[in-house]
Image (cartoon, rainbow, N blue to C red; front, side, top):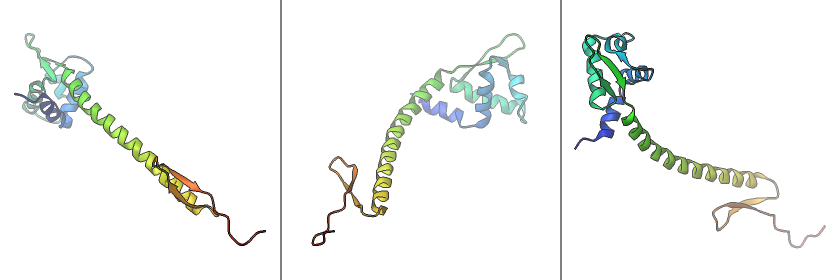
Length: 140
């Protein structure tokens, strides 16, 4: 059984392959045109294309002497869906951390305000500043 997600991420791990995919987003092109911006041999470019092809990220054709390459973005959708699950997970946790830090700031500012005692944590977990207690024995 082949793990398509791992194959996709392995193919995307190389900046040259990501650049090739970026170029193919503009449309179908030849191998020689894909190789132009890179300071590498054609066999090296061919190896990168084989990795992308094995991952299902590109399709290569053959039309006489022209060897066109085109992007196949469907494996990227699977990777994007996987990443989205974690983005939502971390988004919730970051929001909770932000609320916690806001409560800590509120408690800290309340403790520094003259006449206000340290903030007390309520049953709901929020911080609530306590009003100062009246002093006994002295009336003005």
